[in-house]
Image (tube, rainbow, N blue to C red; front, side, top):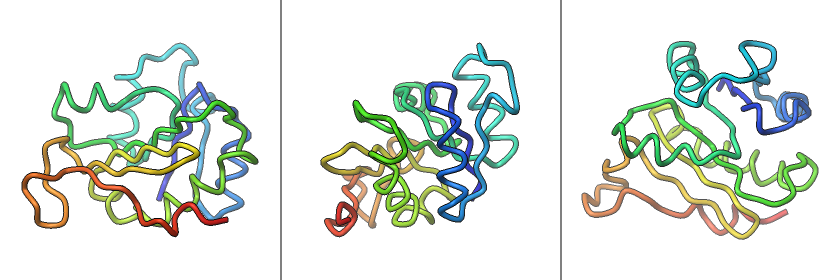
Length: 141
């Protein structure tokens, strides 16, 4: 899985995620620091990246009914990889297949949620449910 770290997260995330076995690149190495979210999403889609961000990409994905790119939203006050990084790595592992197919994964200190793309797509064969929480074991240290 190729990970693209958004500008609103430290470049330290690339090293942290590479240490966990992922191919990770900070946007500052690939594009303009003032690129818009849609520009970042277009690049990620065309180059096969999953975006890791602190932004709320879910609204863009919902409005466009986009199939991608997959996005992992980090929803925490402390954005240092040492603080929430283990939860991000666990979410990447747990949601790997869904992220490959198209998903929005939201990770906060208390829990993580997965929404398949497009936003109205069904999950686990239930047409009324398109979101779900990752297993409780996800939050274990």
